[in-house]
Amino acid sequence: MLTLSRKAKQFLTVLVKLLIVGGAFYFIYSRLAGDESPDWLRFREIFNNNRAYLYASIIIALTFLNRFLEIIKWKNLVSSFKAIPLAQSTAQVLSAMTASLFTPNGIGEYAAKALYFEKVQTKNIIFLNLVCNGIQLIIAVMAGLIGLATFNAYYPVIRGSYLLILLAIVSIVIVLLFTARNFTVKGYSLQKIIDKVNALPKPIHRKNTLLAFGRYFCLIHQHYFLFLLFGVHLPYPDMIAAITAVYFLGSSLPTFQLFDFAVRGSVAVLFFGLMGVNEWVVVFAATLQWLLNIVIPVCVGSYFVFRFKR
Image 1: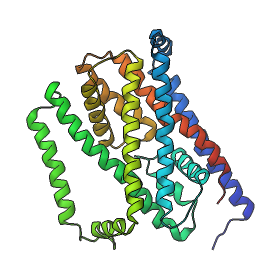
Image 2 (image 1 turned 90 degrees about the horizontal axis):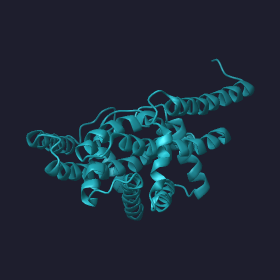
Image 3 (image 1 turned 180 degrees about the vertical axis):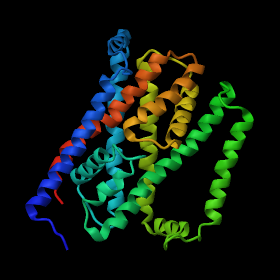
């Protein structure tokens, strides 16, 4: 059997790290310097607002809090079998985010986090990451459907019949999943996953759910304050309904984290255009949120990728 020498393994490890980090920065640069990038000179216009610096401070605070809650979430879930310090949880979350930048819907995050643990824990880490992201998705879907229905009542973007069909499809999928929960594929079934989720200690479940709600609150209101920063002052309920609907529809489409801003940005242009918001404001808000929530964590995560040791 062909085996690699220790030096060859070290070389391949360094090469993979360079490819991950180099690729991340290349794609970020291509987005910011491309022909379709926003006109950053217009960005200076927003600071004519007297409250601009207050809004900017709130946005930065929500950005930090959002990522901090994610780190606490992961630390809480891993504590079900092993206590890890906050610094280690930070390294795992941010480096996994960097490594998953090129994978559909951030699926590479699962494998990246597993590398920090013993091989026998791989399945457990993938399961915990599924729980971590699953509760976040459930909250986004529930809030998004409510937001979409509320927004559609005032700004018809979807025909009432289509909205009912969408709600019916979601309901049917939920019913089918629970009806076929004992259906087994290669030894796995929905019922087994449910049983394994229920086997987690209740305090961990409660904390995970509360932290997920906290993260969602930060993301939604970060977007809301970005619009305030750009001088958009529409009724709060209308704005929140539109933002939650955009997140729901944007998250429903398969995409790469790298192009997440483009998918949500295009949906946002449609929704906020109906509310009379200038298109360049919508694009700037989407781009800034992408910079704050993806680019900055990836830059920090690159440091942890280089420091990673198996």
